[in-house]
Length: 374
Ligand SMILES: *Cc1c(COP(=O)(O)O)cnc(C)c1O
Image (tube, rainbow, N blue to C red; front, side, top):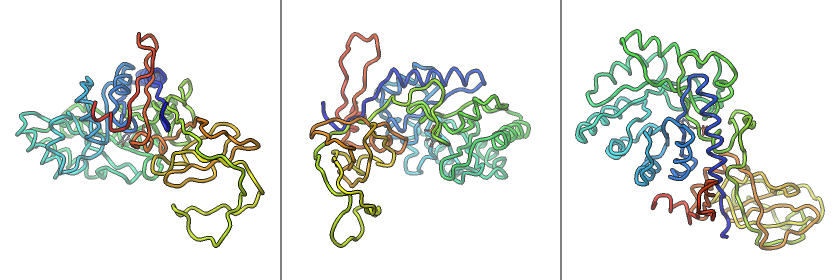
């Protein structure tokens, strides 16, 4: 089978999603499954829906379009503020988008009118992570303006933490979102449909038994695909952390010194060259590189240690034994490694069938591009 490849176990993904959907339903919270790290794969999307996700969210309109073309039956939300230049595409395929700019919402209303439809808007609120969001003091005015646009349906409010600055979702900032929702409802005499508290970083808070207040939705990607919460990268109880793994192939295996020789300048990617002399070691090179992934986000098999990487080469130490050329090694992934691997056209995506399907062979997707051609 071709390498490098991502092996994607749909049953494990579905298990993770089902478990989170059930546990959060107990707390009155629905799950929008986020497909951006799955590059909008229709197969993964279908598993997420099968597991009970109430809808799908993606930050890239291309991914949403790919899922629509594959007839994935879900309500789709664009979870990154739309570009003004993409608003016409937006209203065609997407029912709801997250927004923070009135100029964008105005154009959405205009384009929605031309397309004879209405578009749902969730207003994102800044609660400290300093990425997207309307400042809390300006929310009321933004809602007032949004309600005036004729082809816009005001769907609700949301926030996003733990992405740019690592701010943890907690009782205080989540209560603030609930309070904002209630004051908007009181001010405008309406009931807010969606109060979206955040991403996978909210899972520990949501499952801690804390009062979840008015929060009734989370948008989950990493916790479903990798079984971990992003704040401390701890495994979430009962979830698989190996639903998606990377297989890469050894192309060189030699005993080499640990110390480079010659005049030392910068490396290809600016990293420091090794400085500690530990004599000779067994070194192997795998045919995968920084063009395809984040080497810091790969966890090698036992007894293998990652010691360097460049665009097309991953260099590992293999303990006391040389690993034969042609050997395939399996790596566990973090989110940063996963998103790049999914996006790399050089990495084959192999999606394992659901147990019980008559076709027991693996269905292969040749490249990332194939998702879009589907
Ligand atoms: C990526 C993203 C998510 C999902 O984040 P995970 O940590 O993968 O769960 C949710 N909301 C927004 C706005 C995002 O950009």
